[in-house]
Image 1 (cartoon, rainbow, N blue to C red):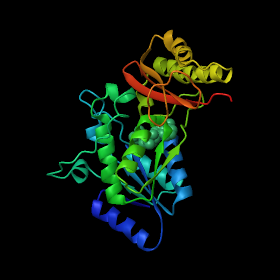
Image 2: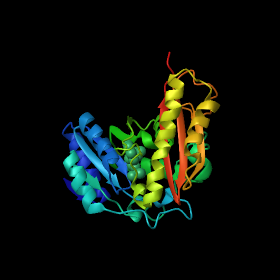
Image 3: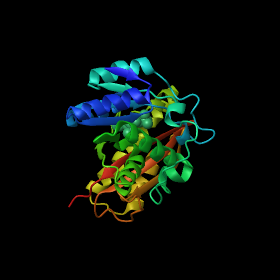
Image 4: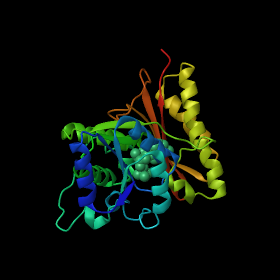
Length: 283
Ligand code: AMP
């Protein structure tokens, strides 16, 4: 497996593969990899011939006061893990490589970036869509794999790729959870023991909404309330938002007639955790 921070090296490698008739897949990450990321790599390995994992803590998707400076960096361990998962290359550009002097472009997807996380993280999705456009331009993958954990990010990237005819097939991979249900996240390591203990209620609340809906409840206000009730007594948890939306448009939905997305952001102490679940009503 090749590890490189050079744009020239990775793009030459990918174009050599393409010249040999091999398909290329990309898994964009910010590192501090866990089983969630590795499942994305495995999904990519199953669908293309050569998989590139990018590891880049993208400064433009962090707002002032967020955790850019202390974001965990575990490069050596990350490389060992993705190698085992079957990746062929790891691209670890620095900021100047991604945004060289004179870089003046920004990809902004409107509409679906405005609600959910977009309402609380100004500029975040502009940073995400721009860095993904740059990475797609360097690697030119046929396929890129994203996790459903970041449901809004997935919808934004799908919109961008479709609008700009980027020709990348976006594949969604399911959320990987800890044994007790907490969605895996690079940020879980920030949690104190008490916060970690209470954070499990996020998934419990999501599952409560799912089972209510299975029992026939279709009123989204009631489903949302089931989530809020579950986390309300946890002293370390503070809900930033809990919304039930259409999974593609991310517009709010009042009745769960078809599959809807319950998306939440919850602070556990100072750590902001996001999670979501697709709720499929019984037909
Ligand atoms: P990040 O490194 O947090 O930017 O995430 C990189 C990719 O991994 C994104 O597509 C995320 O949605 C995905 N990802 C992060 N956590 C999980 C998880 N628990 N399960 C599945 N995918 C995940």
